[in-house]
Image 1: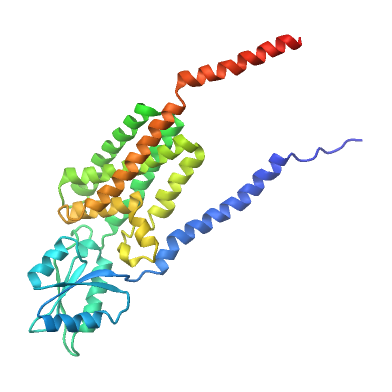
Image 2: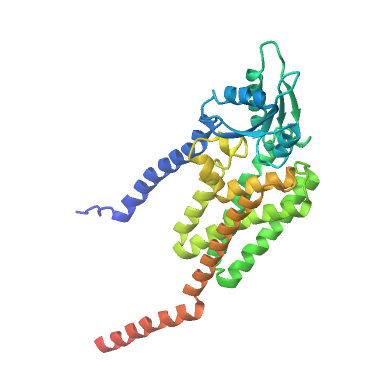
Amino acid sequence: MTTTPAPSPGRTRGPLAVLVAVPLIVAFALWAFAWPAARTAPRDLPLGVAGPPSAVEQLTGQLQQHEGAFEVHRYPDEAAARKAVQDREVYGALVAGPSGPRMLTASAAGPVVAQLLTQAASRTAPEGTTVRTEDVVPAPANDPRGSALSSSVLPLALAGVAAGALTVLLRLRGTRGVGALMGTAVLVGVVAAALADSWLGVLSGNWWAEAAAFGLTVLAVSSTVAGLGALLGPKGIAAGALLSVLLGNPWSGMSTAPEMLPEPAGVLGQLLPPGAGGTLLRNVGLFDGQAVDTPVLVLTVWTVLGLIAVTVGGMRSAPGRTESEGAAPSGLRNRLSDMRS
């Protein structure tokens, strides 16, 4: 009589882990991507108002009827409002004049936002009056909807995750790991700028500044993934990929604007490398390098922390120390075996 051996616990846990983990990952990804898209609306969206004090007061009151939608900035005249749009202080400006209000927009900051502001301005105009619109900083002719620029965030995140994961899997730690990450970021930056600017023409800023923006974004992602991997192993790689791809990409606000996303996605997205990198790339490539301080700071912090973790991981797993530590237990086991025999 033969008996069937009972299945080992490992064989049971494996399928159960897959059955539980995959639906959870899918649910998390759908939440991260679909929730912001389904809740897109202006939330404290910076908007300028300019003109005579009485007209400004009236326009401000009308805009504030949309509770929580706009953060109104007041300017003395059209010139000041126009400069604020160009400097990325506001997404647009409503200018009061003798012939009625006029809307200054910047489709380079996001065509969706520019269209929304035009619609909001039309509601403030007297009945029967048409609001004139001027695109102060237009989107590139090769990318009028901004889709090419917004699509660049995911490839940069994937490139960073790949570079960081390979650095960990190839056991490149310490100076070797840091050198590999920095070299990869430089090459990716040059290639990306050549494609986006020289070939596709979706960017129109300083070429080398664009390459630096691409490279810094990839370096921030890759060093974060490599740093977490050096400290935590495969779990660290997974955590870095989650931050960059499943959260950083959909919460970057590149297809609309960070202020169009529900909270806290809009704020947190700009604190993650893909969101900060996308904002930096837009400001460098379309706004002559205006308002780059914050995104550069965010990317630099992620980069420095990641590279420190890579260096520390290299010190913890130095080859000579690992071999010497592994030799002692092996020799001890051999001596114990001899004593038993």
